[in-house]
Length: 435
Image 1 (tube, rainbow, N blue to C red):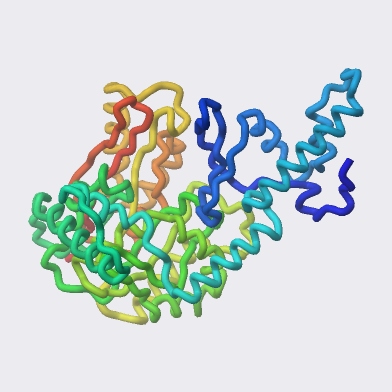
Image 2 (image 1 turned 180 degrees about the vertical axis):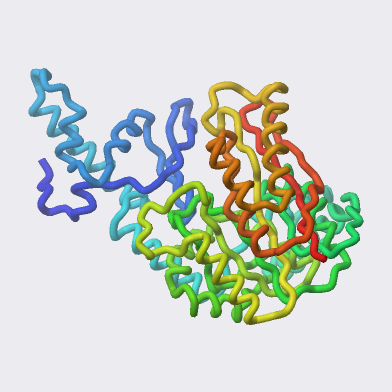
């Protein structure tokens, strides 16, 4: 039997990081792929389905020996021999998961260190989700081989993305507001399903004067930070690099400290910021941005010990930093609304009755947001316990507080539902109007 004393502590008491199990098949066999939802680890580990029950025991408290003992019956006549085999198998699973960075411990920390170093060297997050606009445009153009050199590929991607954004904006209806639009609520749904609603919102800024900056507030879907998450780095997009507003970011750093950037790697897989960037660059050129992931005001921090930045203190510090810098600021709340259906844990497929029910619920709460009463909006969702899993209460409420709109208008509301009724995601475009 392996000597547990010779093994690293994180291997003796294994603790699984958050993983996303994905059913896969290989040679007719049903397997499970373990994916890192934070995308910090790119490799995917494949295990047999029965391994999932063992992995659930990797809680950081039980030792490998204790885990193995739970896998062998007490009345097994060959318990000693089978216990030894189980221990060997559990250790092998632990070693493999550690190799793939799926356990908390020094191996994963080394992955994090390497990624942080590369991010600092590049000074920008790579384009990931936003590259889908190039794929959409490429397919619409009939396909064809992309250019060979990196320089030609970048120019080709920019041309495709620019043309696609122009087409989406041209198809959108002009809301024809009399007042200036100081902020938008737009989706972070993928472009194929949400493009019309994105365009319906951003159409309101077509022809506007370029602001001094755009504040984009998103949702932390995959990361581990339970406070506000920011980074001093820029973002790559198919239209070129979007730079940060360093003056505002340094103003926030002076008020809140480096804890604001503690979980900045959460931005690496996050699409809620990235999917807004091509629209903003297309409309306003190289305008700088202030990008932040905001927590849900209904979910308390795991440890409210001052190690992370809370929603209210962030809004206050950002207001002060913007006031100190002056100039014109536009705001974007990157927000999807309801998430219902079996994909989100509900027992039944989405049918027409469920769609009507969800729309009624959505419009009831959108009405409170449009009434420009942030407290009533948040309190109403707290009262009903957010039954349809709106995912962006934090950034919507913060945007309303920061923008100081005189009026708020609904531009569009839609539901994206797959053919099998496995998932419904509702989205809206909302305009926050100035004087």
